[in-house]
Amino acid sequence: MSQQSPVSVTEAEVATSHAVAQSETKAAVEADPASPEPPTPHVSVRPAADAQERSGESPSHEAHAQKVKPRIQTVNLQAHFGSFQVLKGIDLSIPAGSVTAIIGPSGCGKSTFVRCLNRMHEVVPDARVQGNVLLDGHDIYADGVNPVQVRKYVGMVFQKPNPFPTMSIRENVLAGLRLQGMSTRRSEERVESSLRSAALWDEVKDKLDKPGSSLSGGQQQRLCIARALALDPEVILMDEPCSALDPIATAKIENLIDELRGRYTVVIVTHNMQQAARVADYTAYFLMGELIEVDRTAVVFSKPANKKTEDYITGRLG
Ligand SMILES: Nc1ncnc2c1ncn2[C@@H]1O[C@H](COP(=O)(O)OP(=O)(O)OP(=O)(O)O)[C@@H](O)[C@H]1O
Ligand SMILES: [Mg+2]
Image (cartoon, rainbow, N blue to C red; front, side, top):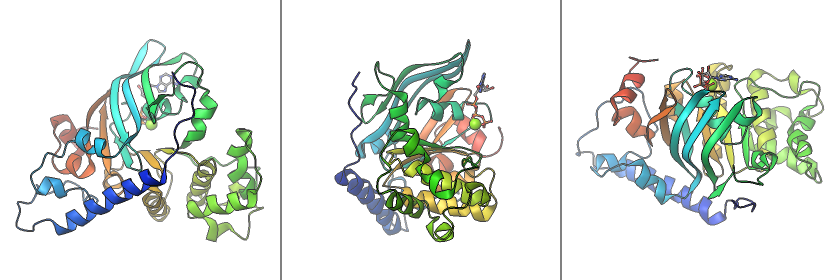
């Protein structure tokens, strides 16, 4: 369908998602202490978003997701490597400004799923995608849509920090812009604002000409996040961004994700359920190429609707 550019995040939308997040937090704080407590979560979860649960209302993901406009919506998304079907028809709505965690056992299709969201899956020979991925209502797989343009709006951060080793820190931040053929005018401002947004500026501002590879693993990962942010994306996909990092570097990335919430829509693949519980507004559980359950994180970890989800989060599977 359309070749229009996806609609950008309006201030109103950002304000809405902030407002929703704030009102939920407030409601959670104000929840009646006498109301029945939910079962003890298997992992401790973000405090926000469990107010409805306490008040007994249905906490359906759909109802909630509709309150905040979806930034991304997948419709019957299927992915193959040759004749092997990895994703078996995923319908998932990802609200604008939210952080959504994708969890599930190794090989269930998490990486494949996020790679379908910015047209990376198709770069593998023999790989193909069917179904729809709507970004602000526009199908990124429609005829005539340029995958390079899609990747500007939907950035990706990988498991292993991958700065360009021979480039300086400054050049690394600008690398995506150059690859996109975009103007790097006022590049100093862009470098500073991207590094600030990635919570790295203070650590590197005096050595912007040093190679990206001279940074620690955690700093390199934040540099990669800065490189993605420099393109001013709508969505940031993170595929196990902390798996190569120590707990302190991991905490910095998690804090950063928290700061990105609202301004960006973040999808994070993680094997670390504590991490999903700490950072994600929503959690989606995948198993063997199927979406088993998606809901607000507090619900998935304390009252999963599906026994398969419960088996996974309690360690009986995976
Ligand atoms: N390039 C490829 N060619 C063929 N099959 C592949 C390829 N990449 C992945 N697969 C297969 O697709 C399935 C899903 O892989 P994917 O990488 O999406 O899983 P995952 O959930 O991200 O796993 P992990 O948690 O181990 O990263 C697996 O069965 C995997 O073997
Ligand atoms: Mg993976």
